[in-house]
Length: 134
Image (tube, rainbow, N blue to C red; front, side, top):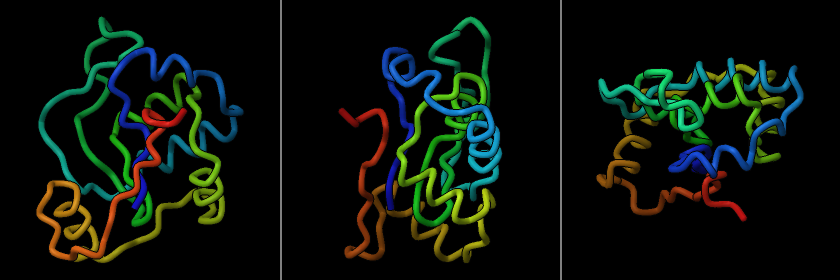
């Protein structure tokens, strides 16, 4: 499981702006918006680059079974064309830009893993988040 797009500061987002072609940003944004909800809260998320704008989405953590990302990543990809890891783009393209169905048990296991209640100690989350790349 790889994490992507868990930005903490405006500088992290700003350094990755305008890195995607328009067609990739549109397709990836739609893909990211259609992930399976793993964790969530009623809390709204503000745009780190435009905090006065108001909430851009509800805070959710989404997955496709291989990658996990915050719901705000779709906004950053669609609005600012932020960079995504090449491997993630390749994975989305290989799935023809559609999040495939995954079993509820797998979604629950990912949620437990991310919340620290992992039932399977052999499953690891690899941090491929752009917020942590150099």
